[in-house]
Length: 605
Image 1 (cartoon, rainbow, N blue to C red):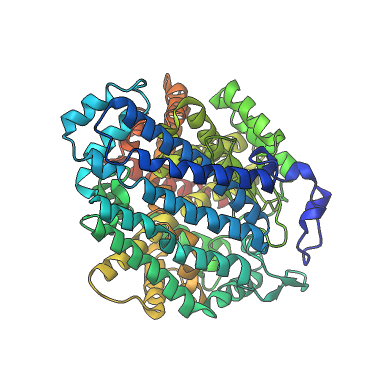
Image 2 (tube, rainbow, N blue to C red):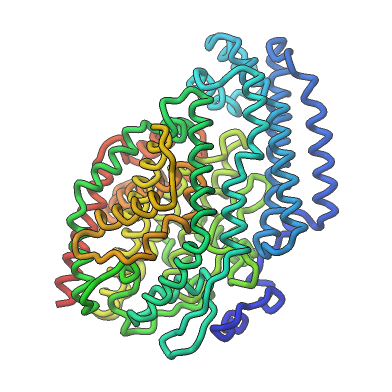
């Protein structure tokens, strides 16, 4: 751990971190030269595509061969892109890997365009003929769901010429996200602030997260102001970037003849738009618990006014709850024992096999993520800073990693990719199991209050915040769909209004927190954030079944992970007894939140 304990005003260099805390990217490619050889191989594979165009009707074997070529190329391109991007992520300043990433993205667009004839050509056949053809494949259990989905989405697939143009536009479509990421991770600089002891500290994303948990209200205010001022300084650029992203989404929705951009984003997983609206409307009709939490925080913190930056610090920090990384690993493995020995053993192997890149280093991309891959084990990025919150983040990302691993190990490539709607169930369930484990071991009321506070804050971040983000995202897309322009002032005003609505009348909105919309990277993945809330609600419902000892629930949950994308997510969750087409999972989550707020109020006196 010595490498992680640098002075607070220094950002560690990668060479100072022990290898066991860093990714082993040689598991993907031994060298850049090996990557280049596979890139050439992928280019050669694209040259074979022309042999199939206009001939797919000729025989089931030829069609199967064409689909297999696309599958093999997709696996190869995914591997190429993963190697380049993960190398770039460990130091975003290295232009070589930025170029390799961009090169792969451009090639992927070309490859997609080369195969763009497949769906239009297949849809020239009747549904009955398509099913007859696929039933004569040498392996009928690989592309069965693909044909089922192709038939369902028939009305949104355009002519070969239009599909080719849409495929070629994908490189340009990455523009808003690419520009935002480079600005946010590489170019944007944060000012220095003074910590609790008066020491001047250079602010970073990871330090921002830790300082926002400070018990010193002056530090929280100064850090929030400093952090958001950096985004305000670039607000015109960030407003234009987000506006372009929204216009892009509206364009693709209209190009594919969807009712609107929400319908377009949800239709890929066959999620009814009513589920999205039910989530928002059910939550906004039950905000009393959150309003009470804001009022209770204000009382416990003894504040004259409570601002958004006061909603993240622990209310009960009397104990030192810092958790070194190695301890977090052992606690996480033990906490997930209810999922069985096989799951635990896989998790243990993942940690020892360098699936995780642990610590913040200069130039490294911020945040945390899992990157699952079919041809190699998953990779998890962390910027671990010894907080309880980061221990829960580790459990969360390892939930994704094990989901990816189990899906890839049990499904063919064509059915291994699971929906984002289902993905967050695995990660948030891991967090729930970790919480239960820690609550059972709580030594006194103070520790129990701390953990309840942590769970309430988790619900706030994973559920309420994401619902609010989802409402914001829906409103700005509807704004553009009505032919109205998005401006930085409008976006900032809307964010302030929604923040006040969700937190309630006890909140005092400060000026700079209203710029928070400008720093949310998930807005560059259209209608992504709502899935955190739906997944969280689903995982809470599954946790209830765990706690109640419902027979077979663990096996059904593991089967969900192993199922990958072999069916639509609503159907996969129904197999666990969770019906997301009703408001019941949302209502249960809101009820539990309100109960925990009441419990904290009672225990805190």
